[in-house]
Length: 312
Ligand SMILES: Nc1ncnc2c1ncn2[C@@H]1O[C@H](COP(=O)(O)OP(=O)(O)OP(=O)(O)O)[C@@H](O)[C@H]1O
Ligand SMILES: [Mg+2]
Image (cartoon, rainbow, N blue to C red):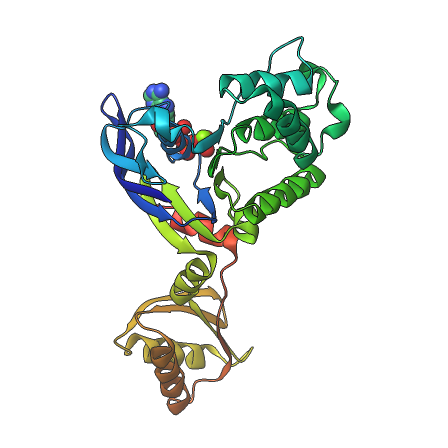
């Protein structure tokens, strides 16, 4: 459905996006996450045919967005991060205007506008002037506008920014409906936990580079695999016992880092998975270290975001 191959964009000599290769399957809700300046909007503007890539290609439904922008636009609905609305138009007239831009037949325009206003829960605002809507309502109207020509792919650049919690929940509901309608959705946000709740798969970008792409479960597995082991020693077991535990850990070849965040807590990173952590525990018990708790601290998604976008 959506294929990006080596997509790269420089602004002058500044690399805003480098070598992004990515596939999003049909009917997927795909989250695009990254801190400010990561290159999310740059990528989305390229896909929406508003910006030319420096290198690389992107295809939507097999249509190349760079070579064949006119055809690609029929498949794409785009909601930009910032947008203006016209004065002196009601919501219905606003959607009718865009429907005309896409050359919808007169008999379809009214029906489509009514359906979309219902989808974004603005049916009671049909006759309201667009510039008098609240910000959250304008965002929903803009989403409706991006759907007017029934595109298969929706590109939504931070559609829920600035919305209150109730409105964000409503937006999630609308996105789920879109997925049920069979649309493919690419949606950007800074908020990883929020996206991971509703998306099937995610891409994390940082400084124009892909940091991760895959399912939400794969991201959690990847991060938990790297999570440190917390080894708690019996409170008050004495300095000698702690020193003994530390020297035991130092002798284990696959231990890569030993921290002591609290007097009786050792935090260890190691190369390897469950087998290695099991061997480590066996060795500590053999050396009679007073271990009373031993576990891998699960990463929450906020930590994952900070960690994966941390040091680039
Ligand atoms: N027109 C431009 N000219 C020069 N540099 C630009 C231009 N547009 C974007 N950039 C730079 O490219 C980088 C990526 O910007 P982009 O807007 O794609 O990031 P973003 O991930 O959407 O960030 P945000 O979360 O703040 O919306 C930034 O460093 C930005 O300063
Ligand atoms: Mg942006």
